[in-house]
Image 1 (tube, rainbow, N blue to C red):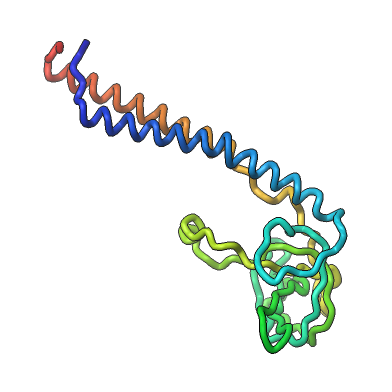
Image 2 (cartoon, helix red, strand yellow):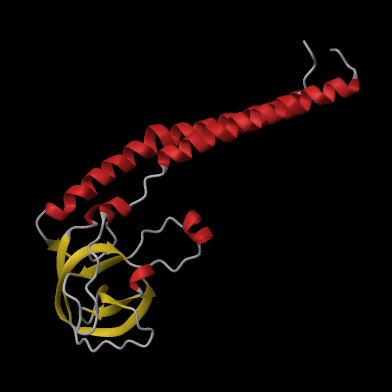
Length: 205
């Protein structure tokens, strides 16, 4: 047998094992977890209405809900793709405790003004817009803020699109195969590199 460098071989073997482990984790743990979550979310729209959560709870996404806005502290504009802009009110619910955010509707006008004074609002539970950069989302696992998507638009706005469970990504199978692919590529590249090095050195052992 030809002589292989011990330390680099051990390092590459550990790296390949780690990538295979990550692939197995995505395939055997994260994928079943996500499929179970999607099954729950698919059933949520048909469940009875629930109170809007005071704190983030992704198990309630797409459930019917309602809340009472004592006063809209501010109304923000957020991008909504082809729909233009989402108009989102930041609501006060009392002297203490967290408020909540409600998506009042959409508009294509960059200058749209919304005269909404609050009150009872009903709709669906969704995620609030996330302004964090992509790199921050990868490393920051803090739960996303919840959003009440109103089923009746405020005056002058277009009705919100009903939240769609099919838009929730499920990429864990692809992630698993990516890790397996990386492991194979790393192993193949290392074997080729070492064999070429040995061939150049002319060392048969």
